Length: 283
Ligand code: NAP
Image (cartoon, rainbow, N blue to C red; front, side, top):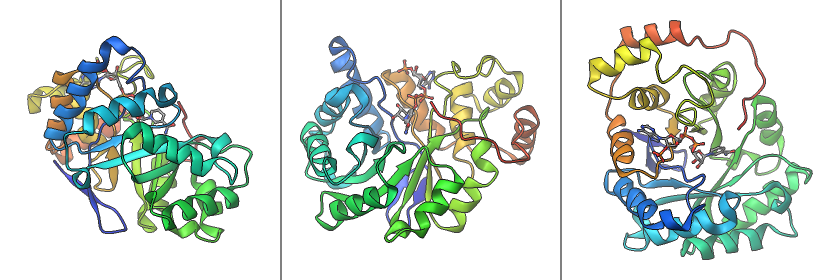
């Protein structure tokens, strides 16, 4: 499994595990726990969740899944909702997430998306949580390049360690200015929906002949090629969600697939990056 080094010196797997919709159906609990544990055992020790996902249900399943593991070997990410991202609610929101997760700290806490609370207040609250040890690091989500520049101008804004935005082979808008900005500033990029929700965000991806050709060449699935493509640059962490043990094993194995220059060129042609700024894609 390839690793991504964060600016605090900690290395995390380039492919982690998403959890949106995990916990929605209680009958799926054991299957979801098994799948998350399979992922951890296969090197996907980074798990991404959020207070939003089932309002605690997703964090609870993650809490059950991680119980047998050495906490220090895991990298747990959760997110605070915009309405909780201020003085009044953030600490309580974070403590509630910790309770559901059955842990006493988060490795990374993300501001899920921008709301009406001033960004400066949110950053102060995130910094307070970091100073008091409830979170190790903080970052933001659904931010574009202008949002990042605004953040950088704020007191403590330079402490942002990661940005989580939508990114998959058919949605490359962040490559134009955001990803270069993040690389220059040593901020990691977390790619959500790296499988375009198994193709549902863009019709025709899963059956695309160029992706299929690369998949056949590597004895892999198209989904594995999409993940290998997302993490190709060394600064991107992809967080596919799977409640299937088989898919989880495949996602972990994608962390070792090396696409050739030729394959990358063909994929660029089939799925070109934009040559101008485009609005941030959001799910
Ligand atoms: P995704 O990871 O792009 O796709 C998930 C879908 O792909 C599921 O239907 C899953 O089904 C299927 N799948 C997974 N691995 C597969 C494989 N190897 N082969 C075939 N199908 C496979 O979509 P996502 O869950 O929306 O995004 C990933 C994570 O990003 C979320 O879970 C969440 O943690 C995070 N996220 C963050 C934000 C944000 O605003 N920050 C927004 C959206 C998502 P099975 O379960 O059956 O495998």
